[in-house]
Image (tube, rainbow, N blue to C red):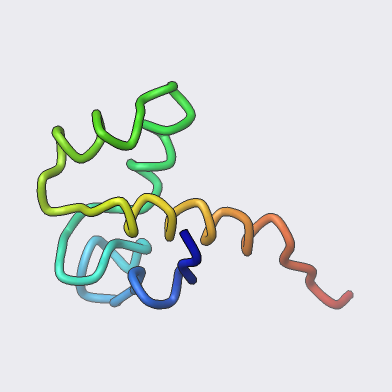
Length: 74
């Protein structure tokens, strides 16, 4: 599945104190990454959070990849 995180993730200062969340929801990306780290499957996560689709899960992983590649100029 070819998904870019910008399609599905946003950060708004007035919602969840600006934490990255899935567009149109109040579900933080960090919560879903935690579920994935704990070994939950995509199907299990979607059952728990029916507002999400497989594309959201893929976007959360793309977001994590982008953060891991981030380099700050010193």
